[in-house]
Length: 267
Image 1: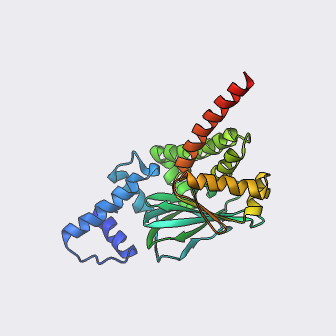
Image 2: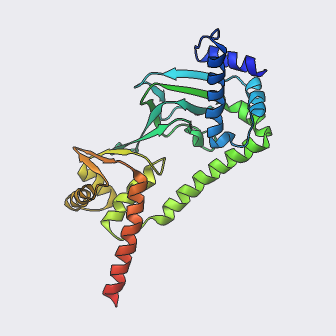
Image 3: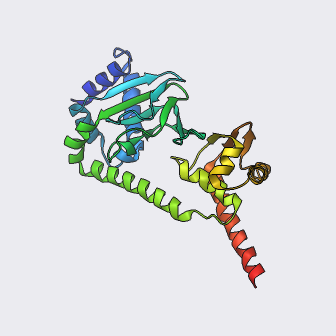
């Protein structure tokens, strides 16, 4: 598949008019390449390599309107999915439905890739279009038979999976149950797919208190203080975190102060 045929294929799949002016053609094509190259999975690959890959694989392009469900929790993961345009919402819960955690993910990015391999090859999260979005996916079989032949792709994919494992390992060892404040922050950090961005936690205060082993009153007071500090926004049965990375940084500073004060008391 040469570069012009590649462009024509993209236009057909995205329901674009192929018979448009040449400048517009090049903009669409360059945008497609630029979007793919922004993703860690394709970093290091050139246009020629991506064109060769596209020439061998059936790309599944889909458009979703805002509010449409893209992937559901429990569905089998048989494709590698890319978010090319727009923003999606990630919604997850525990087995007892005690809470619902919402996150937001913007293009360009991979969607639910960690479910592609392993013992449980199903999605653990429901993905919904927050805005109108463009999605492209590649069959798992093609990844195993063709994409894995490309050294750069194989290295990038393994690095992404390794980084994911390391993130979870770090979270486990960073848990500090020394005080209520860190219990609340660790609860959020442990359950978020992305360690940054806006999060929304829908949970009853009594359920929150039961999960982290504290009283409802103490959890309520702590959250009110976090809201005064500008770290969370409280609504009825909902806790919004405007930026999780800021809350994580606050925790690190809090622990330093907490540890220092404890040393002074012990002297």
